[in-house]
Image 1: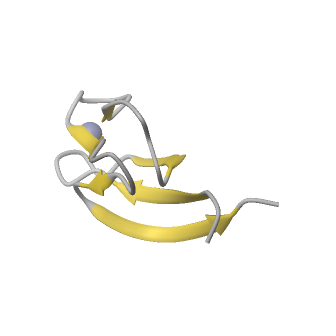
Image 2: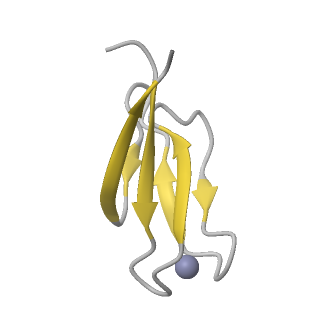
Length: 57
Ligand SMILES: [Zn+2]
């Protein structure tokens, strides 16, 4: 699975945001600033509910 994007629902404000599944830096919610993903060296640790996975084309 080479690089996919995930849509994550923020647990705090329910904003849905699409981010890279292997984010190399911390990704914060654009609305409330809650951390949605943290880099782990490989696959990002997603904090929140993944509502969709979009494969890169
Ligand atoms: Zn939020």
